[in-house]
Image 1 (cartoon, one colour):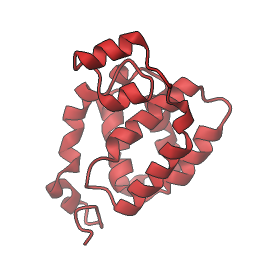
Image 2: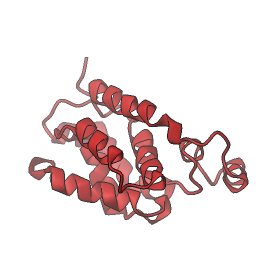
Image 3: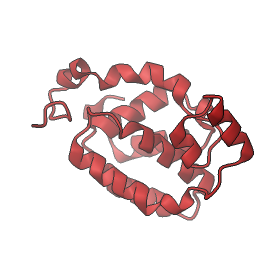
Image 4: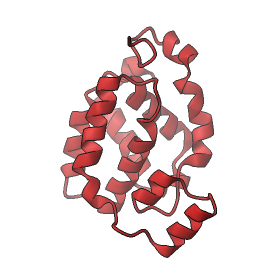
Length: 156
């Protein structure tokens, strides 16, 4: 996705691709496009997420998947701090979706380093670690500078 041609409909498609399947099945290109949108997009992502998360046709499992991916992506310093703060607020608003106790399978996977901490916190038994390798190239200072926008790297 070209960030200059971003629109709400294309971002909604990415959100559906991420939330409708288990994390390990999310296509790398969809994850990469969503990461670029989270990190650098100018669309009001917080408002869009609030609307989508509040919809009754979205299952809690889908919400947890989406919130988990956002939780993973906002840790990178390439995004503006103000945007990260907005997204952290959404994560807090939906924190009640986190289970009080993960499943025994999830605990075992995490103990064997086969499930990341954030996936465990969101009650998932799969994570996006395998796909992140192809996404990380977009969080570099060089890539951020190539966009010609204010990014987390260019903030004082």
